[in-house]
Amino acid sequence: MTFRAWASGAALLVLAWAAPLVRAAENHPECPTGAVLALTGKIQHINDKATASYRFSEADLLKLPTKTLKTGSEWTPVAEWSGPTIEAVLKVVGVDKSATRLRAVAHDGFAAMIPLSDLSTYGPVVAHTKDGQRINDPKHGPLFIAYPRDQHPELQTAAAGVKFVWALCTIEVQ
View 1 (cartoon, rainbow, N blue to C red):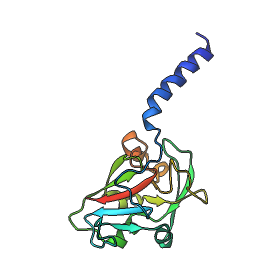
View 2 (view 1 turned 135 degrees about the vertical axis):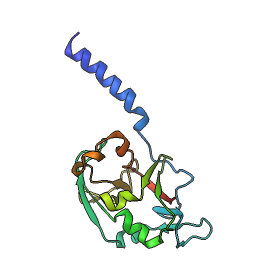
View 3 (view 1 turned 90 degrees about the vertical axis):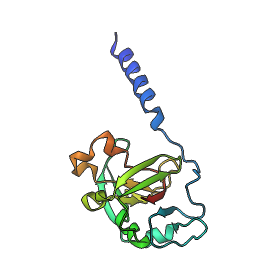
């Protein structure tokens, strides 16, 4: 077998494995209209009574303090991801003391569970900026949850990688 034949076969296997990971931005029913991020669940403050949620506009998120993480993920090269910490976002809405985790939902319906303990341990951000540019790729943005993966070996696993939610639209506090 020639190297070219082997490489072609390997590439097909990788593509077949990765195909379910490719996600196009869609408008999932849990995603807010007229806002870039909605928080629901065990929260103390709402600004949309009809949906019992707190909806953040782009301007609202940009007003929050920004943290920058230089890291990569299983799907992205090393970059500088900037945005408010999830902790800062939750501070705006107030979290019920009985809450233990977050359910982060993407525009295509993908959802990942994030333990609240991750917030103080790793300080993940709701990134709106990548390498100094707003994330305007509809497949990955406008918001992306980023963890400092490269600084923590325990985050360099497939199980931890799922918490990097791109095209984030909703966070449900559970």
